[in-house]
Amino acid sequence: MSNLTELVSRRRSAALFEEGAPGPDRATLEALIDLAIQAPNHRLTFPWRFHVVEGADREALGALWADEAVANGWAPESNWDRERAKLSRAPQVIFVGVVSDPDDAVRQREDQAATSAAVAQLLLLLEDAGFAGMWRTGRMVISEAIRAALAYQPGESIEAILYVGRRTSRTPPPRIRPAAARVISWGLHPTPLTSPTAKDAAARG
Image: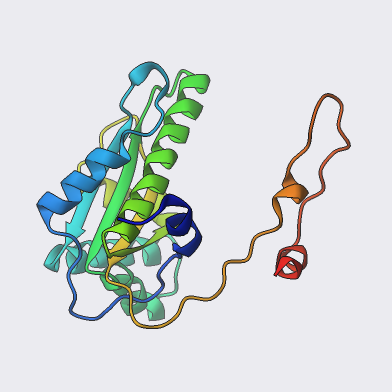
């Protein structure tokens, strides 16, 4: 088990996964998710849902997504194969849903925050267990084809799409973030913070 500081420092999103290597088995993934959902949760609404897709189901779901993407003009017809293949880039794809009350704006924000916190914890837990993950969103989060195929319920939205597998031997690039001092203010009536740029972040190192 890794030291938390070291784990947070080394975790990187994985754009590539080891070919032929599986993601976590069902018992392992359930154990990791059980820990991930210990995330803070206002009013104990338990808003998170995890829809796991693996094996041939990835290709079937990818074809449904590609059909929808082309039909809606999100991708040209010539890119159908590319869109279909997106869900096969990792051995396991986890669609993370959040269930909330659409008529309660405050609860919606709280439930989305709790679900995002659970996703962040799950990515760290996967890293600690020897796996890698990549958090994606994009137009798939509004896909009606995916909602129907995964039996999403009214009031449930897609918060994150996690690609999970074993990391390749390729060394991930350095993480670029601004120094904390650039994004922290102190006390009342501070000078407004300006948005850091990629150049500011790179200069840190």
